Image (cartoon, rainbow, N blue to C red):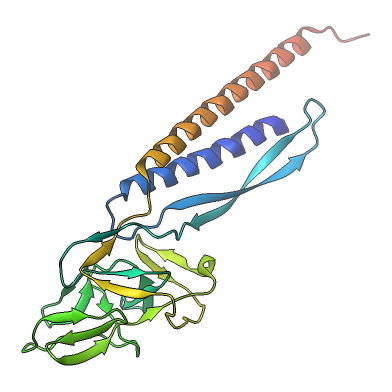
Length: 242
């Protein structure tokens, strides 16, 4: 098989992966604080006698767009959002992870937990427990949690210098080996949630573009296959010289 076929197949593989990412973005339009994903690709040039430029497509993985989503006012005391680049700290049972999904609730033992059941942690990475006899829960802009007049704890809010080092873990969790920094540019908003940063129209336009590109590559591969078949037939009809 010639290089042109391999090149076309590498492009098709990348387009299929990109389509899967777009489909996942669209599926999570209503997922709180979801961050859209994009494929990261590069090219490797090849020498070809019949074209000036035919490049292999190299898949370098996935990048996450950390552009903030719109903030929606819910009026729920246990809904929180971050205005700024920060993340909340949560413990998923295997250590502290980070999220911007602030749809919280209380567990049966009055721990502050995420929708997935992960414990929200304080600045010492300890679960936050709300006293049974406490009053109305209030969460300050600095993440401090109060029940009545008593400050119970302070939610861990962290910022990161290198967002590209954050690795996605599920739809809303991130983990990193980078040391978290103080949240100097982030404030906590009680009674609000961050929406997904997915724009449906943009994703649909991307989907159409990907499908058109895929069809164009398919046509190219069909023509190349036909060219090779024609060449083989012609060679087969040639009479060997004596």
